[in-house]
Each structure stands twice: as C-alpha cells, then as structure tokens.
Length: 212
Image 1 (cartoon, rainbow, N blue to C red):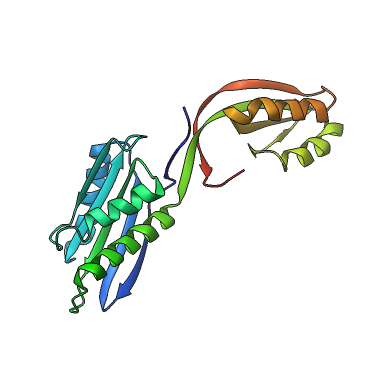
Image 2 (cartoon, rainbow, N blue to C red; image 1 turned 135 degrees about the vertical axis):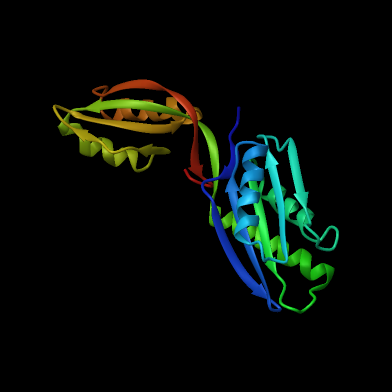
C-alpha cells in the first residue's frame, strides 16, 4: 500500500484581519472520538470565542469528512477548510478555526479567504508528514569501515538512529520498504560485503513531505 499524508503533531497559528482574530488549530487524529475530543478541547479553551468552526477527515482515503460553520454564514467556514485539507491531501486530521469577531464584517468572500488561510497555517504549524511503510534494518560493521559507511548513508534515503560503539559499530536504519533492496545493495558493495544486515520488520512511519 502506498504512503499517506497526515500531521506530525498538534500545532496552532493565528492572524488578524479587519480586527477579527483567527486561530487555526490542527492535530492528527485516530478516529471520530479523537477528532471530537480535540474539538471539545479547543471549544473549552475558547468558550468566549464568536465561532469555533471545524473540519476533519478520517481514513487513508478520507472516507469520512465532517465540517461545520458553527454559526458563520453557510459555506464560508467549514467547507472552505475542508477544501484546503483535501487540496493538501491530509487524512486522519482535525482542524478547528477559532474566530474572535472584531466588529468589522468581512463578507462571504472575506470569510472564505480567512478560514482557508487559518486552516492552511494550522496545518503548516502541525507539519504535514508522509506515513510510509518503513523497514528497520539492524546493521553491524567493523570500525575501519564505519567512516566509509557513514559517508555513504548521507546520500541514501534512510534515517540513521544513534549508532552504538562496542566491539563493532552497530546501528539501526529506517528505510522505506520500496528503497530497502537498493540501499542494502549499496551498503554491501561499499563495504565489500563486510557488513551484517538483519531486517527487524516494518511498520508505517513518518517521513517529512518531500524527504529523500
């Protein structure tokens, strides 16, 4: 199964337009209860806000989509927020935009732009990551080969976990399943076959969007 995009951790950002304050909150969520709990948390934090609009998606194919204008003019808040989430292709996420009305009407177009922007900066603050099937490789090389191995790894699509220095150098690599065979070939070739590599299984793990 191919990877999917979601959020790394809860985040928030805000801006002011025509005296109205907009705060975009975004968080990864596992299910509907998780999304509603996040929404409840933001509502409790901003009980005095004019509006707490939301949009969330669940499932790797965004099979569940829910959104609300929370009293704003119909179609000016929840739906534009959902469109931003869909455009960014972020699943299993919840975005809540809190608005404190500043006394100046924004009009329908202004509201759409403001809620879209607040959703976007909230997603940016939470940081979009790609969850991809990732293999853990347990590796061991002798000390004379470590510098050569370390240099190679800098150019490979891997995440190197903290190495341990004992009788030999042992380290763990996180590598996308689709890249694993090629990475192992490079390591074997660069060390003239003098490296031990053992697969420790695979799971979906986060990679920065655009990370190589």
